[in-house]
Image 1 (cartoon, rainbow, N blue to C red):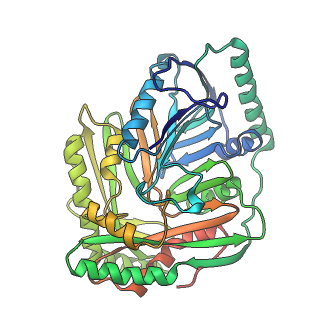
Image 2 (cartoon, one colour):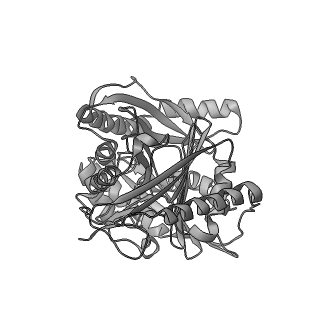
Length: 461
């Protein structure tokens, strides 16, 4: 086991018990493109950038550089470790003097008990970062904050150097604007482990028939090769244009980056109120409104999909029982329609108990039956045994939190990893007793489409 707490003002790491100096400077802007700010960081901060935008487009976060990072491969304590490290850091921040708070952005892998595949080596099981330069757009207000963390007193010269660096980034974003990006050219599409995937559906279906589990989600992956370089700026431009109704995110680490356009919130906390989404059960969109409505009606009345959805509702209800003083849950699902697919969707909201937190909610909720299965423990055992891919960050929690305990995490589906200039796309589906391998395969084709389209490709099926 190795737990690591690090800051990036050098090559050394600090202990969580060390006394820290925390510098923070915030300014308000009239206008600034978040994508242009992200692109402005390519020269100095490539490999240390992140982007997040919520589904409603009321909150956008861009981070350039790392003022403070937390990584951990402690399977059992990874949520508490991040929470403790963040709270420890925030005791040194003068939050009352600034209008905008520091924000910690990061992710957890889907299953830390599974040995990572080679393509996922850049991303630790737990990886969170406070940016050196942070852009927040919230309800049309724009803030630029600069942060620096040190074990030594921070000199005025260092503070001025950071402000100068920030001003150069702003100048670049404002003067250069947005670069133009075209979609990459795919030279090869590889359906990885296709036969193993189809066989796994048969194996898992048989286990469920034997009542060894109620539901298990099995995923597979595609690999894409290209005739040119793939950059995170290029892919941010594509998902911004094509999937505006989704959570948009990019997370770089060195030469690799993970990005996506997810329809699904895991949990949001705002002013001690918690919000989550039960999303499970899906069907394709129709080519006409009449056909689309017919598909939606079919989904709302389909026993298999309703059963899948109810597993998620029951599990999220249990988490809200444990963490909330009270909550509301609708009696039945509605439809959540995005560009390529429509889902069964049930929102839930409640008021957190005094001892609850967003990361405790993340720990309780991940993975939901929509991404893992039911019962959770047994489903995860089956996934480890039969799933022919390592998910890495796919279907895992990704998001942010601030010093006040507010934050939001999405489920990182409709996502892709770019490693060694190849892309790896992931999609899965819930397996129950009457699942059919070919039908499950065809469902993954629909789920691959958003990311595949962003790369300039298509799939038929």
